[in-house]
Image (cartoon, rainbow, N blue to C red; front, side, top):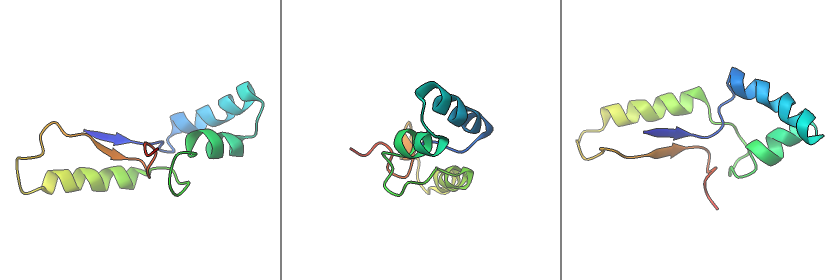
Length: 79
């Protein structure tokens, strides 16, 4: 299972201004302090990041990876 961080999809694009309005902060602050705060590089996960991970898993030369979760999030879950 691939567990991506925030990917800048149409859904996320819609959520940014909604969160800004609800919280009374700028859209940039929503991105910086809410969505990307816990990443190590302040970047969104990309579709390419997820696709490359899927390719890696599909090409893995062993059946040993079964039921694994791989977090693709620029460190979003790191504390």
